[in-house]
Image (cartoon, rainbow, N blue to C red; front, side):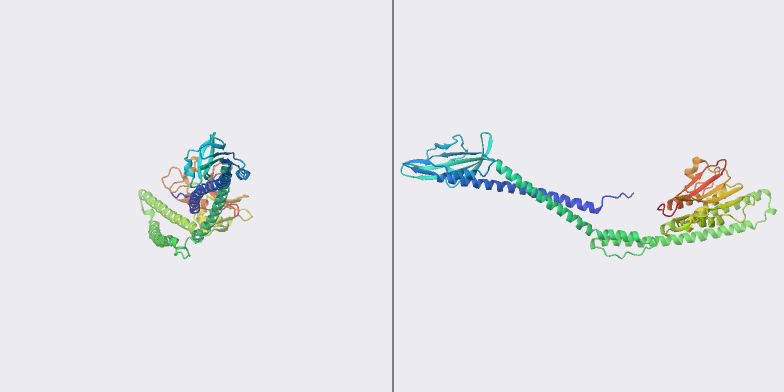
Length: 463
């Protein structure tokens, strides 16, 4: 059984979205690392500038090393308004000249002689970014290396990194959304040949089994070739089936007609009573076989026509009248009263005239053979939404429990007999194909058993 899956468009779009999501995640990770590095570099430069200014403030006066902390160094560090600043100035002897004595980085100060050292540490419960810088003191009274240690909390750089990351995230999200929208348009445009191919197949006449001649991309060429190969094989099978049906109809009907003619030529008066009964059985069986053969061929015809015929507006009264004339035999029992009633206004339905007439003929024929005792009425009724063909007889009718069964193939409508047919099955299939249904109405005090062929009026339903 065919189960429709998700569309090719949605599957492609989902895969592209996954690729874009992975790419966006990679870009965001790279952007986060970059902004963290950029924020560290920006504030590290502030620390380096402040450290150099403090080192410039170290001078030897009267043979003693003194420190003059420039205000510009603190102003420079004050650009990070969220952060706290800790500093320490160490003389060549390792003594603290000013600042926080307990600000001791876990690094050998001599390593800062070639150039400033940047490191991370915790001080008083807070994370710090620390710079250690050194300056050589050359004076007869004092010499050696003095060092400056400056620590800055990391709140400002974290805020800067967060802001830059948010902006990068917004930019990546916007670009991903635009890329996804552009991809969706591109996929939709690229899949247009598939839709065009489907529309071409839908618009084709059911009887047209010639190869497709449509321009498609190279990727769809194997698909079109497979369809054309299948259509060629189907065309061969349909032609073979049509020949078989035509040959079967001729080969079956001809012997049956000859058999019926031969049986009718037998002189019943010269036969004993037992042979007459046998002859009557042969005549009945031949008639049943002829009717059953016609029903089979008519059923095949109805199925074929609904696969190929175009539905057109029909006057239900006119079609029902033709069916009534075709179904009522000339040799009907004169004791049976038959009648046809129709409304004055037109009852217009959408249908195929031949199939619809065959459906009504089958209902009338079934009533004559299995239901009618002395009365048969055929009526066309116009309702606001439906057109009805009612066939009523004064027979015993069909038990309500069997109503759901008699519209199946090879199920008899007359209880107590083993014969089965296609009459109601054909009528029910035609009604269903036209958007209607075949229903039944039980006998009552005023009316007999009624079979109703119910069809939507033109414009009220779509078959």
